[in-house]
Length: 203
Image (cartoon, rainbow, N blue to C red; front, side, top):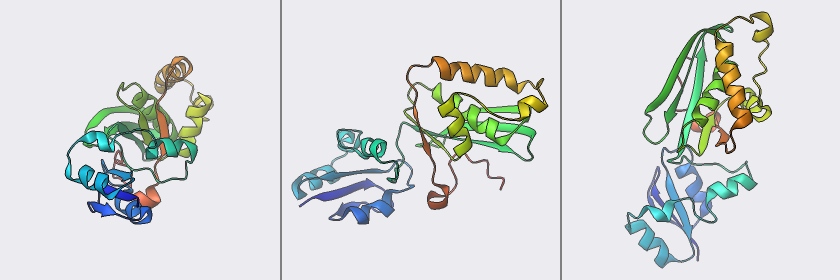
């Protein structure tokens, strides 16, 4: 009978039901879990510290996610989270990215004028510059749609065309156009998992 091992989650144990595993790993930083075809293999994996048991091997949840984005995705060590903060739109803007595993801040930029959506867009592109990054968490559907289109479609540009932020936006759009391999951007389910790790905490 199939067994499900949680080595790092809200509760660490061997389970017989996938449904029991899901709430114990969803939203848990650096969660490690895997299914095994036998109880013997599950016990060996649970008692071992060998990380290969919990990597992104064949049949991992990451490959399942690509085929079915509705699946809850746990955190991964190659994930970063991005967010932006802007008290008014437009107003002073800042955005940053953090490593999900350690919550270490990887980058943090500020502009005298911008909007939250522009910051979210620039944060995603900045995250794409990090070589080890395979997955990026964002909580902005608008910024993710702009990434897919390869263009920041903010109306602010027509209203205030001389802002310094547009030089950075131009560079970001050029990067999207020319970068061959891009990390996968995943929508953070904040209503289920809580605020994104890169959140500025000003709500």
